Length: 147
Image (cartoon, rainbow, N blue to C red; front, side):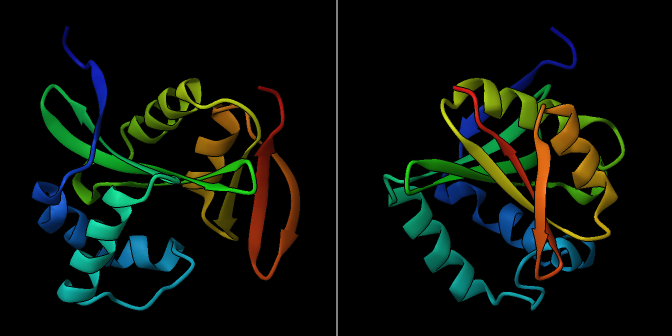
């Protein structure tokens, strides 16, 4: 089916792609840590992320092309989610589809923290049914509490 989105588990083979996306200036400005990440630190992080039983890390593909990545970290029974859209795939609605698909696989409470001014991620969160519940340290906090 054309335009079918698939979320697949990230692997070490995705390291270069994820490294490039993470260091993209737009991604960095929206991240909690805005500093560039060096390649070695990224590879260590990715290996740890893949091995971590309390973290899910996926790559979204549309028609076989990687368009973004999303993750869910389990913290005190809450799934804290985050996402990144590939620079050449932004503005095409992939973020909304990816996060909606991710949330359909998660149960219980969901949380996301979005840097103030990141209107694209705000729209993604709201389209996925998350509601803004507060703001702290320049980040808007979104949540879904139903299971």
